[in-house]
Length: 285
Image 1 (tube, helix red, strand yellow):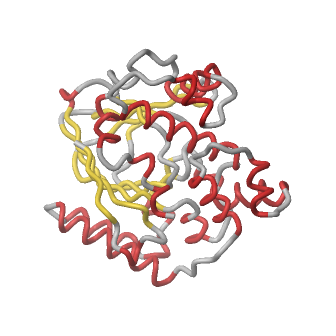
Image 2 (tube, one colour):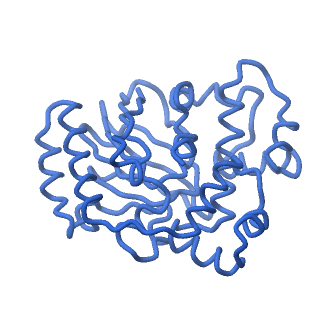
């Protein structure tokens, strides 16, 4: 089960949306997911989730901590329940939120899990994690999470930067663009964009474009009730040809697309049927 919850308007400069996800061991095998184009803070309340992914041909597999924070993801990954039943509430943060909070380069958060209680010590996070652990229902848990993010909003000075204009432009173009288009649109030098984009967002502009473009194409294919012209759709989203799309598909999912590409992605289909999670950050700009 997957469900999204709108963040209060007062938090939307920091939080894109909240989500709740529950899964049982007998619900099915590992679930394939894509990068959300957001930073994530996970607040588990039942069981244990196992995450698996490949990075540079190395297979990573580990249990997620009860409370964790991760930056931008550039890899497809799998989630499954370790034993019995698992439940988690999460906050999908706006791109660049980690930089806004800590005011230091955030590339170290890319594809990495950090313990929330360690990196948010100065924000009295232990109090909120304890309150969350004691909460016995969804309403109470969300109330605790909102209180934590309201505290962050009260002490964090949000800064403007042209990098956020670049992110918005990428979202508006649905990733169907090149880095050179951003430079022309915003009248900035490539060295400045490359350096500051990685510092603030955590990944390069090219990596972010790749994530956003693939998310849009894959979601359209997933939501379509009919077989679409994949070659035409790929070209519309600035892929050189369909083989380029296939290459990205293989990068995220470790295999080539079949005719009906979401038949075996039961959890993913649930995630995109209503308010597709991959597109939510694009709707908050």
